Length: 217
Image (cartoon, rainbow, N blue to C red):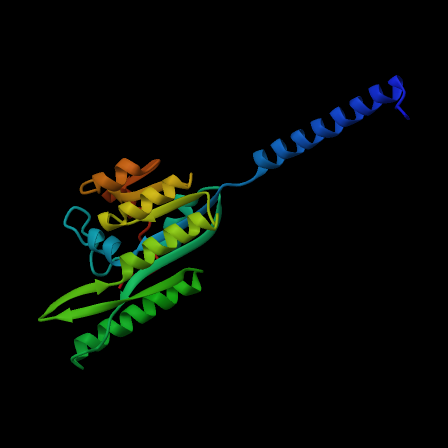
């Protein structure tokens, strides 16, 4: 039976130890230098509704720069996706007012696409003079869950106070992803805040920072 001399066994042990040490150091350094991957999902109609609230009172002529807003939320982290979810308006009654609304929304969404946003379109339902969105919250929830399953992001920034998203948010947490909630200080979602790792509760002075070059409809 052939055996390895004792002095060679010692050198082999040292060599293996050195290799393992270098692997561990390399892994730790790569993790340390790895930027946090962040996705930003904006519930357009929900956010717009709060902007028009009397506590914020964004005037009709005011403009909100979503690009600056996202840059503020991301900081020096890596942005992997920015999505804007909205029900698409239709000119159902063929009036000039409806036509102007449709054209204004299309122009606004075109600006967002030029700034690199992915537009996720839902439907707008018209029921006896009442207007409501259909399918937007479902699209957000699906993207939250798929992103967590596919390890698409490390942190999800959700700009919405829609409590229907809480089950999806819980699942994202279950997959060990971080949630940052963006709401409004005067009227935030306690349920979403409860499950978020970080909360950004906006005030009128915060909104003032992003009023400039992009129309909000």
